[in-house]
Length: 124
Image (cartoon, rainbow, N blue to C red; front, side, top):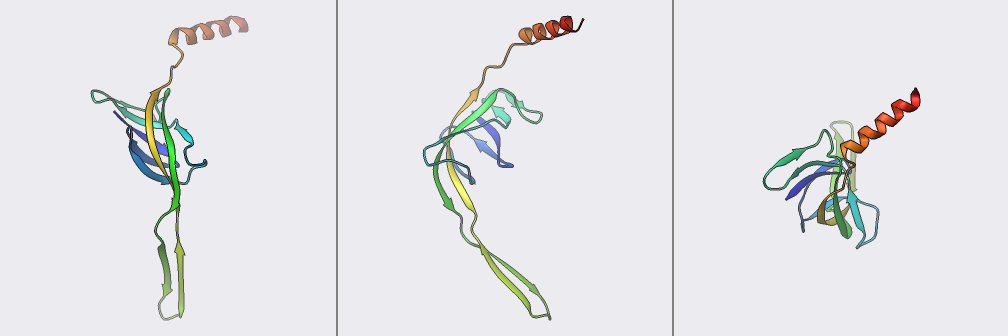
């Protein structure tokens, strides 16, 4: 079973026990995170797509560590002008481990229709 999750504007494949690096998240090592923006879920037999998200599904993960990636050099130059700039950048990341993919119970449609009927009677 796996799910495609939107974390900080990027899409990641989540399955139980998988560890990945994501953009820096708030929390200490060992903290549990819940991601609600699930775009796709596959249980091995059927695939469910969201439009854009699947309601009632969430993915839980724990923070393993925080760190910084390798340095990226940014070099700017304009020829024949004597303009040169060199800059380095190290991006922060959080390594997380996915624990489970949960289906949160959603209200049944019958209770929703009852609420709509009550609202229409109150208006009269």
